[in-house]
Length: 81
Image (cartoon, rainbow, N blue to C red):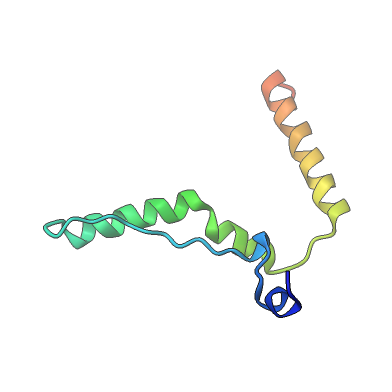
């Protein structure tokens, strides 16, 4: 790639996805809003924004994942009160 192109090249991390709602002309706006809210919730965009508000060290992230896994395992075996 030429150096000028690298300046404007976006890495895969910087790709932003838009939510597109297919609505018919006669469809009610409330139904379209409901579809949008469902799609927004499924895309987990808000969760990603909350995670990016503060930096968490990789070691802390791993520790919380391990603790969650241990808790889930205890739940399935019935050891948690």
